[in-house]
Amino acid sequence: PLSDADKAQYIARIKTLLQEKNAVLVAHYYTDADIQALAEATGGCVSDSLEMARFGAQHDADTLIVAGVKFMGETAKILTPEKTVLMPTLDATCSLDLGCPADKFSAFCDAHPDRTVVVYANTSAAVKARADYVVTSSMALELVEHLDSQGKKILWGPDKHLGSYIAKQTGADMIMWQGACVVHDEFKAKALVQLKQQYPDAAVLVHPESPQNVVELADAVGSTSQLIKASQTLPNDTFIVATDKGIFYKMQQLAPGKTFIEAPTGGNGATCRSCAHCPWMAMNGLAAIENALTTGGVAHEIHVDPDLGKQAMIPLNRMLDFAK
Ligand code: 13P
Ligand code: SF4
Image 1 (cartoon, rainbow, N blue to C red):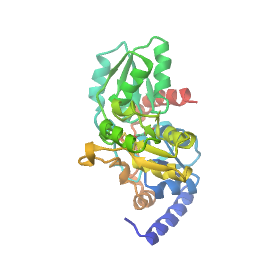
Image 2: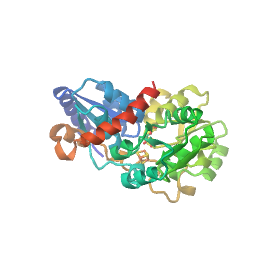
Image 3: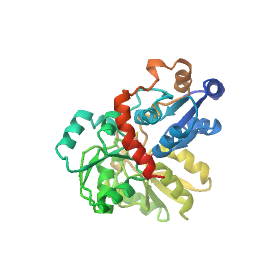
Image 4: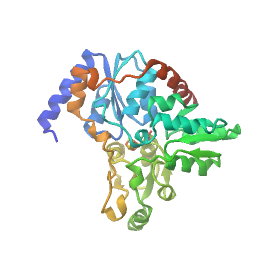
């Protein structure tokens, strides 16, 4: 970890670079608190993946620096190809993206030509290019409800937990790619029931990438922004939170008197792969942001094949239009 003096130096330098390059910092709630605070202090945004996409698309900066994971940078580039889109590291991927290669997903779609293809934003540009609609967790349920009401049958990918949650809520006819998030997949229902017994007055907030039996224990289910909202609006003083622990920074900031507890991962806490923090989100740091703004280029700049980008822009714009 950086010393306070080093942090202050990086922050000062990044502020100058943002101005010099007419750049804006767009950060996700799972990144480090320093990054979230810096995004807010410099007129950037910190938000869920839908609002990150909207903010980047509407902002008039020449350069977007996206602190998050690769699909977020790609989405920004697809929506505004004329902008330079930089990331602290291009190695920050996502297990949902990794687990859904475009050629295999495309073959899955080809095998079900009668279905409307709805893909989660946590996918590559090539997978989005194959979709009729892109969704994020903040509006996926409403979109599928809408398509179902029009009698459409859905092909869903890649998150099986989010897909199952939506299918259960809407009754829509959905077939699914079997992907999962390595972070949320670790939350355990049995241990959560025990924790709830210890904190009977706590409300349980769950991101829908979590397993179905964890979602069933929730008082509120939603995107990161929606969970933060719930932590402000629900009357409880204590919350058990089943999502990446990066979100605690904003929850504590907005509701300083409340208590936030991590939902249990890996059974009795003995084993887990990610322990409620996304390893790829954790790759974002102040030094990497400074480096991206200083050097740009192959190590930091997002490129999307223009033809693929044009194709992927269509379902992404449908997402933004639907979510208005
Ligand atoms: P949100 O759209 O809720 O911010 O989710 C993005 C994500 O990657 C969750 O793991
Ligand atoms: Fe992907 Fe999960 Fe990380 Fe979100 S938390 S970026 S879904 S691996």
